[in-house]
Image (cartoon, rainbow, N blue to C red):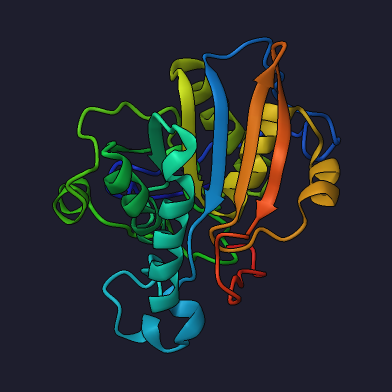
Length: 252
């Protein structure tokens, strides 16, 4: 039996996942149509706890690290790269490093950040002994005034998650947003966000995606566009806008 706690409204008690899809290698979602025409996806920039192994010892929220100094630079480089792409909506994981990555893009484009819990980090019990604490909603808006107050999330993740569950959860968020928001949208999240989103949009198995995507580097870019009712992957893991220290071989 699972006994869990609710953490600031983003994570909910877990339910048992079904035993299909990722395990069987069958794609979960196929979109016959969508309102969005182009979706950009990126992972957050370099995180502080991966460059300072002792950071968590004094952190108020040890499982919600900020960007490192290099990560802040990467976020600015990302914003510069995406400025001419006609992005009309920005969605971000509620984790601090993702909000810090999304903020320069949103500020440069004068767009709100819609915080999507469905794009949260993989709630892997090997990484987190309990649901991770992140910024409460009011503190989030205070730190990031560009965060939208009126956004209704697509999905609320549950703790704990196995690999199949996080793919399903992220795919549901990605496809739901794609159907609800027209134009060119940006998803900012984690390695799992990229995998799960493309899992849902492209209708490929995880094994197929693994062969295509490989490592998801910090602030790398993926671009999918809708053609004849189906999503097609174009740009894949591009880091040409970044300096030499792209990093990010670790999944989370």
